[in-house]
Length: 208
Image (cartoon, rainbow, N blue to C red; front, side, top):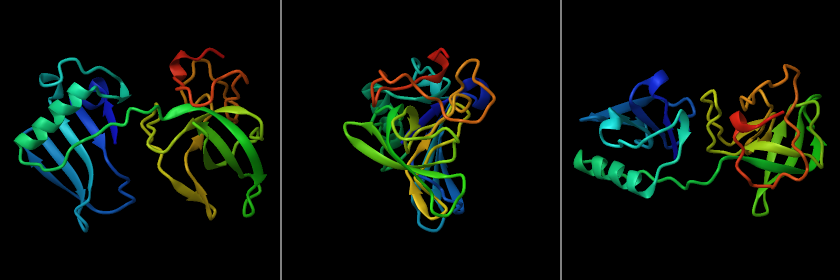
C-alpha cells in the first residue's frame, strides 16, 4: 500500500492507495471520516481516504509518500474497525526509490528508441525495466522507482508493458526525481559507481 500526505495541496487527508484502478469504474463507501474506494464491478478495495487525520495521528508528518510506524498503523486499523470496515491497512516500509545497477541492456525489438534492461535493485532482485533514455547502457548505477513508488509529482509506479515487453518500474531522470538544479536535457541520472545498490534515494537531498 502507498500512503500519501500533503496537507498544503490536498488538505488534512491521508490517502492510501491499495491497488491500480486500471481505468475501471469505482464507487465509494463513506463512514464517518473514512471513505473506502473500490472497483464497482468486483468490489476490490483500491484506496482509502482518512479525513481530518491530524486529529488522530497528531505526529503525522510528510509532503508526499510517507511510511507509518506500527503505532500509527494500529490506530488506523482501529479507526477502520470502529466504522465497521473489516479490512486493514499495511505498510511494508521498504524503500521504493533506490539505487540500481543495470546488468544488461538490449534494443527493444519493436522500437527504435526503447531499451530492455535487467536491473538489480536490492538483495539480488532483478527487475526487467523498459527505458527510453538515450544514455541507458549496461554497467550504470542508476535510480530505480520500483512498483509501489510514488514520484515527487504524485505519479504512482505500477508494473506495466511497453510495446509488448513487461516493465517492472522506471529508471529515473534527475528532473523526475526533483533533484535540485536538474539538467533540462533528456536522460537518466547516472550515479557514482560506489553507490550502494538497494539504498534509498531521496532526490531533494542529492547534489549534482
